[in-house]
Amino acid sequence: MQYEILTREQRIHFVEKGYVKLEDCFERADVQEWLDLSFLRLGYEPADPSTWKESRIHMPVMHRKKVAEFSPKGWSGICDVMGGSGRIEGEPSWGDGFIINFSHEADKPWQAPTAERGGWHKDGNFFRHFLDSPEQGLLTIILWDDILPKSGGTFLAADSVPAVARYLLDHPEGCEPGAFGGLISGCSEMIEATGKTGDVFLIHPFMLHSASPNPSGRPRYITNPPVGLKAPMNFNRSLPDDFSLVEEAVLHALGVDRLNFQISSERETYHTDFRKERDRMLVEEKARLVQLGIPVPD
Ligand SMILES: O=C(O)CCC(=O)C(=O)O
Ligand SMILES: [Fe+2]
Image 1 (cartoon, rainbow, N blue to C red):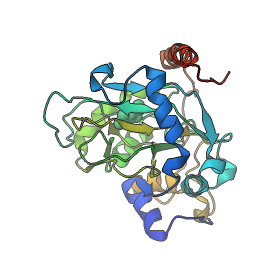
Image 2 (image 1 turned 180 degrees about the vertical axis):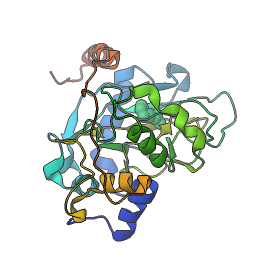
Image 3 (image 1 turned 45 degrees about the vertical axis):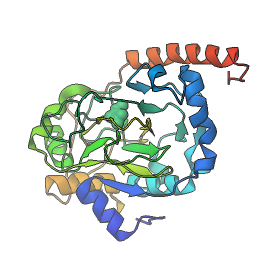
Image 4 (image 1 turned 135 degrees about the vertical axis):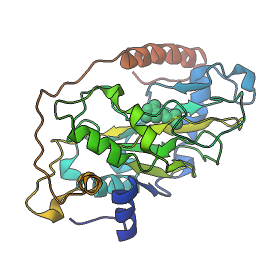
C-alpha cells in the first residue's frame, strides 16, 4: 500500500487505537462564513446564550464542499486509512450540517468519561451492521472551531474497536444499529476529541463514542460525516499489503492475520426519521435567511 501522508507512527496508532488526528486540514478563514451563518439559520444571537434554545443540535446541510478540493490533506488521510481513493464510494463532501453542543449536561459539573455514562454508540443508523459493512467505512469528526478540554469534545472509547469487532464476528446474521452501546462496559480508555479549527479525527467505524458535557458556555462545532466503501471490507486479501488500515485494525483486534468472513443474511439499508427531520429544519432555516435578505441555495 502506498500512503500519501500518514507516517508509520500514525498508521500504527490507527490500527492499535482506532483513530488518528490530522492537524491543519483547512484554514479558519475558509469556514468563517458557514460559522457566522449558522446562528442566523437557527435564529440564535451569538452574544446572548439565553436565545440558544437547544442544548445540542444536529443541523441539516445547506452548503457542501468536495473534500478532495476543499481539504487535500483531509482527503489524503481518508484515502490512506481506507485503502486508496479507488475503494471510496462517490465523491465525499463536507457540509455545514453542524452538530453544535451549546450546553449539553451543563447543569452539573463536568465529568470525565466513564463506561457508566449514557450515550455510547456506534455510528450508522441507516443500515444493518456486519463485520464487513461498507456503508460506514469510516467515521470522521471535523473540527470547524477550536475545541478546548471540558468543552463538549466528543468522547471516544479508544479500546472499543476489539469489543465491537468480536461482537460482529459472532453475529454474521447482522445487528441492528442500536446493538452496540452495552459493549462499552469492557472499555476504559476514553479520550476527548479536542483540537483546533481545521483538525480532523479519522476514526475506525467500530469506535464507540458519545456526546460529552459542555458547561464551558462556548458552542462546540463538529460534523461527523461517514465515508462509504464501494464494496464490503475484505479480510481475506491474498496480499497482506492490500489490507486497508481499517481492515488491518479489525484483524489486529481479532488477533488474526486474515479471516474468511461471510455474512449469513441480507444487507439492508433503512430510511430514518432523521432525514425527514433535517429536511423540515432546512425549510425553516431557509425561511429565516430569506427574511433577512440572505441568498439561499435551491
Ligand atoms: O455531538 C457529539 O459530540 C457526538 C455526536 C455523535 O456521535 C452523533 O451524532 O452520532
Ligand atoms: Fe455518533
